[in-house]
Image (cartoon, rainbow, N blue to C red; front, side, top):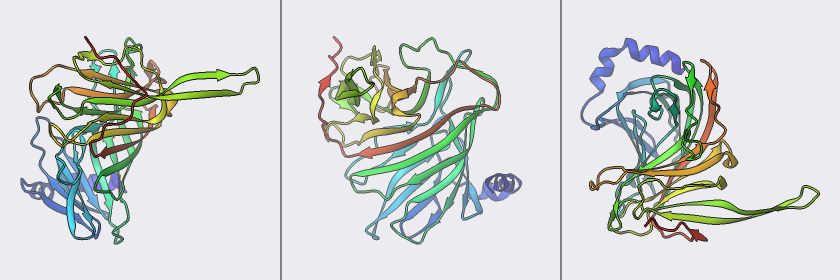
Length: 343
């Protein structure tokens, strides 16, 4: 059905242009959820073609998702931008912080390609205020990758946590070569990633990365193995370039980009749950570019898929992705071990 409505949107160009306005436009209203079309004021806006209950409603460069807490308190909980940025937003007094993006990879000729963007979304409304908000759609990086089976499920949020479950299969639209020269740095295919600002120990949105790894594995002669796990944290003081010299694969699903307290600004902790590819194929990594601009997202945290091949023919499946994108209240987590700070 989505392919048909894409054609309908193309043919109804005048209608789309009329509905794409500078002011926010409510395009979905239900007892639990409201979705508004808006204008992305960033440097590289991309349009999302939107359908609600089977009817085209317009094209917007940003979609704002609201939830009606207790039936009386409508608060924005997500921003979706066509260029691929997904920003979770916790209700006040928290302020918006970092954002998330989906899959990108390192091309042998072009280097790190942009993350896939959201090109189409079709929403279904529900009269149950406690039901999740569901959408299906398309993704593309406008060059080498696309997905026609995107599924997004926005779970009814709590005041201290919002989450969306995302699933899709990426296929190649041309022959691609994946640059494997950064295998040791775990920077070949970023399944999903988080970005936020870290300017100094006094000025930041997020300041710690945390994941759980396998500390030890012991096997007997009969193939029975036992493992011990520990939570491993790394702070960003004096970090330039890659954070981890030798990261280990995930022992559970989550990589967290932590904000340890409500200062210097009350921005949330971000986290990604990596469900597919499986956690044993995901290595966490981060990259820091020094900045003096507190508005610049200079830290990127991702999960690298270690199973990516060197080359893929046109029309082949690259990867099947399932991730949960989560924002939580700032909180200092427990850490069994911490990476020694950079000198």
